[in-house]
Figure 1 (cartoon, rainbow, N blue to C red):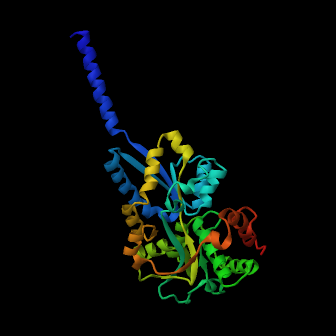
Figure 2 (cartoon, rainbow, N blue to C red):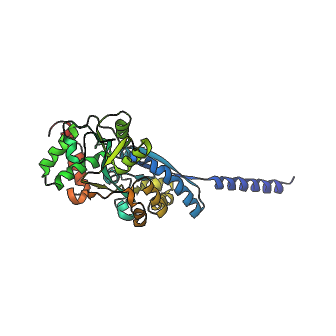
Figure 3 (cartoon, rainbow, N blue to C red):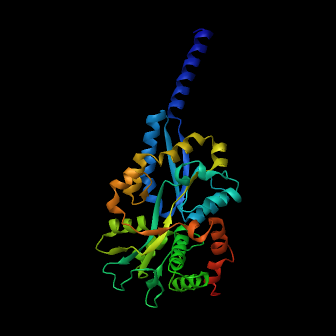
Length: 336
């Protein structure tokens, strides 16, 4: 056996091994998301993987992390290397811009609709028959009603509940002092503050605590579908808040991992008709008008308000109400 033959054989073997390695190379990204989006992304992720393979020939995988929205933001600040974030409130992305320098400040301009692929709203879930006749926000401050809601300090779901109640008071003519008094009474009726929306769901549905769960529309519908419509009723209040969960690429992480193309492709996919269909299937209100029209029967009409239009910029709302020493802390400490 000549040296040339051996060299050529080795080269062919190396090429074959390299080819196999290349064929099996796989890019993986991590999506850090909020509590009640678990089921949505269980369906979105494999659909994206298939679409990306068809489009590029590349095999990718998407890993998932869930928790209270603000807890997830804190996890990223403490070192969790997520390539993308799909939060339920803009402030939880802004903190990654300002404190972590992880995301570019113009993240809202990178995707359609202010980087929000769908909307939802805050509604009430009551036990079947609604024995206490809970119909609107004013019922949640009655002495005989226990309210289950996640902690606004750690959960975007909880913050939206707080702001929905505050906004409802304002829309009915209350000044800030009266709105504060109303929200204070509501939270005095909350026996336990879970860290995230899914924890609050467990408290209400499995531990049978409380008369009403205040949560996102999609979560309320999901509970009925999973646990039985014979056990719970969904109640739409006279007004509520529009929640537009935002998404962003974590620039510092994707640049480090070399995953920007896939990360951008993943978030772009959320706005495509196939993904919008999945979004509607999971009871979020899709942005695509055709998909929304096709699923109109799932989404009753409700008067909603935009937080920034009614209460001011998110940054100011966050500072006033939810930062350390803010209104919610004062309410919790009994300093109302």
